[in-house]
Length: 97
Image (cartoon, rainbow, N blue to C red; front, side):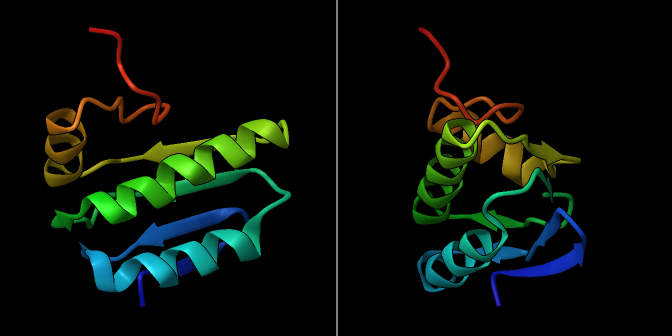
């Protein structure tokens, strides 16, 4: 499973977020849409671009809904992967070059 519910409005990401986990992550986010969400990325050891796309789409959907979408405690692997593809871990918005 891509993520585990860690409480109301919070989501703990699993350690491996690859292509196989993208659908499960999408489903979990979809089930939480409409309320503020805090994503705990502290345990992420491997992050694939497909799951990054799901997270970015989620951030955009939450923004459209005027709800909070925050990633907290990102692991080093999470931060490094996001930096490699040019995204900001705080708001999941592409950095300007």
